[in-house]
Image (cartoon, rainbow, N blue to C red; front, side):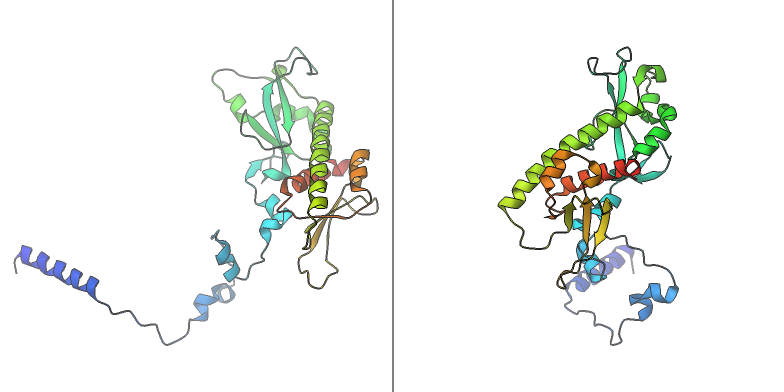
Length: 279
């Protein structure tokens, strides 16, 4: 058979296969446990690479992680902590920006740059991350040169040294705490108005309290048999702010994390930052 005739025969056979209506039959035997439950037989943990929520439900994984404050904190992108030199989720760290110093508000007006912490994750300007702990900031204040963003040290246009920027732990702590408290007052006041106007019909997964006998952050199992998920308690008493205490007014305020995510993360950030100072 010549080569053109052989190619023609192959094409005809492929076309005939496409036109067939025969469907492959399923095997009569059941699925082997070596396939359906491989991790049990191999002694290895199951590795999950799928981001599909429906797939997670098929595997009987815990649902409701999107409304879990701790899951959201741990799933944020990893960043290097310049103080401890450990990589951690960025929601557990403080973002520090290198920017031009405000001459009127700056501690040292002779220095053109300053490292300023931000409470919201921003993309502009050179960025680095440090521990969200006032105690560690105090302890490692002598190594503040290491807080500089890498882009500032690797710049071909200008090399910034320690004499060019302002970093003073006391100013850092006061400024950051003041900004956190100001945002907390506004966000909490707005959330309370929303809760009072539209009372929740379902159980809230976050409870705000102001109780000196409770820890700053704790998890409480619901007393209602119908509620399976535990409740996260955020205690605002360690903040020691009269305006915040007045807003809470000795109540247990139930919130939904999915509806008030920014407020819950803000409270967690403030409590974690002050944790070492309130012991």
